[in-house]
Length: 254
Image 1 (tube, rainbow, N blue to C red):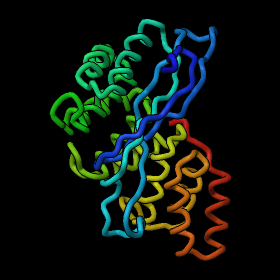
Image 2 (image 1 turned 180 degrees about the horizontal axis):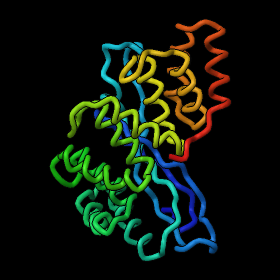
Image 3 (image 1 turned 90 degrees about the vertical axis):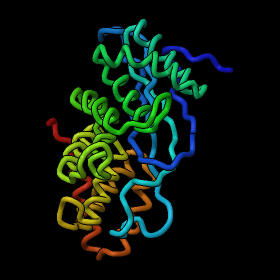
């Protein structure tokens, strides 16, 4: 078995499950000695996919039934924190969820945003403890408030579907936009879906196509599929406008 080192590349493990989708963190190499903390961390995340009929149909719940792919990506940390976090990752990969919980919870309590995100994921999916959407929301909120993009996308999905919180499209849009500003492909795709279906915003295929363009550029295959569905409902002029908007779009700092 290949040894995992602090500067090895991220890897992927797929696990099929019916549930909500959360967004991945994009892989990054070590920042170098110029920043505080050396070593890497690997962060649990999932990808989203559609199934069945037209994903733009308004009678389908958004993001309720998706296979899941665990993504472990790279962020630089102080060595002791990396070791504790990696122990949780290794336990997760062995499906030893109680041990992953034991490794990540102290880091989460100490305020580590990535551990908080992963703890929320364990609670949301009932891994190592009974499923608890309320606890998931609380941990996602802590991480999201620190700018953790995966947690922001996960929190937006809870508000979108009304899991552990009242359904609130305004809050869903808020968190998806924050995550999208960090290049989170799945948040971009969720924005595409919300504009395509008119959830919390007026239905707007041009805006939806723009968000799908951006999602596709950030690596989400679902975004490309949705874009094809949208194109069938749009005029060439509308498609050209959406493509221009995508080229001009820039992340907002706040």
